[in-house]
Every structure is written in C-alpha cells, then in structure tokens.
Length: 262
Ligand code: ADP
Ligand code: MG
Image (tube, rainbow, N blue to C red; front, side, top):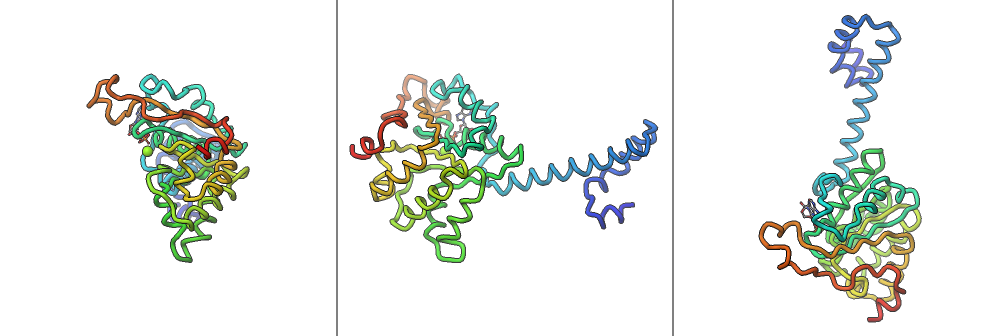
C-alpha cells in the first residue's frame, strides 16, 4: 500500500494510513466513509504544504499577526480599519495600503500581518525592502531590469518595506515607477515609509516622476499615518519622552502638486 501511495504521490495519506485504518476498524466505518476520510487527509496535507510553500516564497521577515498587535500601545492605528483590511476586500479592488511613520511603530508588523491573512486564504504575497528591490531593478539581465519589474508585478500582494532609507538612481526610480504602473488597478501594494509625500521627489530624484508615481499609488489607497511611540524603545524610555516624530501626518487628500511643491 505504501508503494502505491508513493507512486500516486499521496504523501499525506501514506504517512497517516496506519492511523486511518485503525480508526476505521475501531469506528466500523463504511467503505464510503473510509475513502472520504483517506482523501480528506490527503487534500488537507496538500493544502498545508501549499500554504507552507506560499509562506516561504513570500519572504516575510517575521510571521506577524494582527492578534499580537497591541492597539492600545499605538492608538493612532485604527483597529477597525486594520481588521477591515485583514478581511482582504482591498485585494479585490487592487487598493494600496501606505503605512507611514517613524521607526518602531509597527509598520512592518502590520504589513506582514496583512500578508499572512492573504497567504492563509491562498493568495500569493511577496515582501521586499526598497533597498533590495532597487538593487534588483538596476541589476544586469537576465535577473535584473525588466525581468525584476515582471517578477514583482506578479504577486497578488506586494510589500515594499522601508521606502525612504535609501535614495534611488534614475534607472531605479524609473524601474519603481514601471512596477507601480504595472500593478496599478491590477494588484495591491503595501508600502511602508518614514517619508512624507513631499520627500518623494528627492527619493526618486525627479519630482515629475514622483508625482506620476504617487498619483497611481494613491488613486485607490488607504493611508495610515502612525504617529506614536516606538515599540522597540518602549522598555527603555517612558512614554512622555518619546515625542511623535512624523511631521505632517496623513495627507492623502491633499493635491499632490501642493505637497510636492513645498
Ligand atoms: P517599524 O516597521 O515601524 O519600524 P516594526 O513593525 O518592525 O516597526 O516593529 C518593531 C517590533 O515591535 C516588531 O518586532 C513588532 O512585532 C513589534 N511591535 C511594534 N508595534 C507593536 C505593537 N503595537 N504591538 C505589538 N508588537 C509591536
Ligand atoms: Mg520596518
């Protein structure tokens, strides 16, 4: 029987067969009930392996959960909005999510928890820091350049983390624009950043390109400005010593021209 399971690639059934046969004997299962039990075990095993593959492929830095996020610690994050996002309706409308704020406020945690929710129901997700993405966008073919744009265009959910820690070359800025334009109205992107929108011109080295990029990014977007304390520093400093750092807050509804002209 093991040999037959192996020839048919029934890995989970192969592993569980002795236990399933015992259960069938003890419970006097009918042929139909036993066959259903056996097939269900195989299907569940396959789903779990596919889930593990998707999780590995997503390259998340840590498997964060919304349930482990302390909303009381970070009151500027709307729990209602995060729960709504975790229901994943935003993926259907290719809505983007921008998580803005200083270091340690939970941007990467929140982004990863949305990715985990998406992976759990079978979507593909991919995590990359802007620094790594930029390197790949300007790398030589066959992996770099257009191939990188194509690779990062595919996943249903893309997370671009730490936008703003490094500024981009002209080639990298164009690559990032191409990626955002390709994903626009097709797939959702989550971006985390410590920058205000006014600073994107300097990041891309081109105000016109930054305006065009932000235009697409923000057309269908939820912008969460987190202006609280660093969770990393919570044990070292008292709450009152950590002043909110992000200047400007959420400015999604302001015309881009105004923001970028500042
Ligand atoms: P950021 O990306 O904004 O710099 P992170 O998401 O990396 O911050 O958060 C830093 C660490 O603190 C992570 O380990 C994260 O899980 C944890 N963390 C941040 N905010 C919270 C919070 N409100 N509740 C629970 N853990 C948090
Ligand atoms: Mg982070």
